[in-house]
Image (cartoon, rainbow, N blue to C red; front, side, top):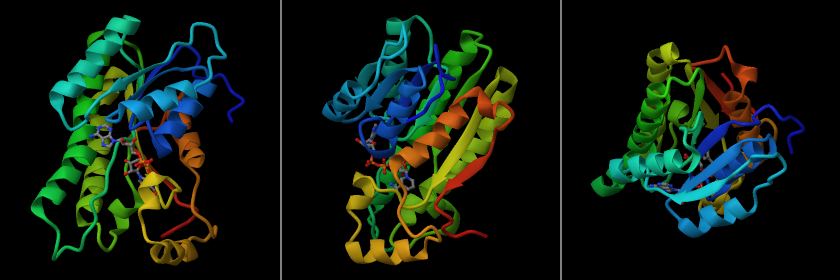
Length: 256
Ligand code: NAD
């Protein structure tokens, strides 16, 4: 766990906060003093994460909320409920909500392609847009948006035509948002995990996992906390001159 207090008095929003990487991000941000809004489509998972968060700093106040990031109305309701509860918008947003619906290109159903794009890419767009609007409108001096891409968006992956497309899109979205939002003091960066041990990868057949792990120079899958470390760095002022960047957290998978 972090030993710093660099996020004290920061209000942070984490989508997909109910599981895996999003949960680890919530725990890491809270351990650095931030107040955390845990947002997820699963109410029970978001509440479980909320219960796991530390309250070590005075004034630290967390909440959980249900959101479907692929719905504009749901995202707007979330932003309104944050404003009502804290009387200010969040100044950090980590977009960790994401899904997979794997199949080969020649078999992929149109609805499975659409659903993955809707959650992973459109969801990131809707949350980023609403978050940035709220922050710019209140004249806050700074903000940080972190998006979750994937190494798969860079190199492709058999059976993930929809997922790889969505994650390439997230990188393009992040770079464009970085260019447009710099004048509001808002930075926007993308984290590209490799193979991380979460419920998402628990669905992958053991055979595929051992093949993939054998390709990782560091010889193992990553932990959600190792991705959360990088998200917390990007959320904090320690990365204050970094925007539009993509940072790989892969144990060296696909170097070069
Ligand atoms: P996970 O399945 O453990 O968690 C994803 C969370 O998103 C879940 O709590 C789920 O309920 C939530 N969610 C799904 N659809 C949603 C929606 N429409 N609205 C709101 N919340 C929704 O997955 P994870 O492995 O922790 O992945 C987190 C992010 O990291 C995802 O964007 C994923 O694509 C990305 N990523 C993961 C890996 C990996 O190896 N695990 C690798 C690269 C990128």
